[in-house]
Image (tube, rainbow, N blue to C red; front, side, top):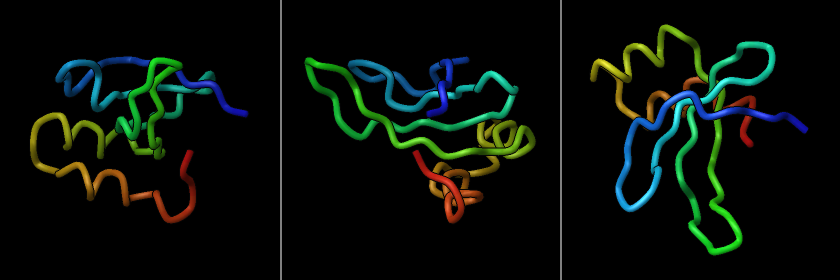
Length: 76
């Protein structure tokens, strides 16, 4: 099982909605809230490249494109 840590909250509305995260090896991920519950929030997580994450942050790439970039091979 992979462990990722929140690097920054990109969208916040009554709680974190979209997060940027990293694993212990420095790989980047984007996480989107799928279910908020009292027992803990559940996120859909996909790996992303640093360049794509940068494009998303400046607004030149949308969230669906970012998530689908490598989403065909890995989802968490």
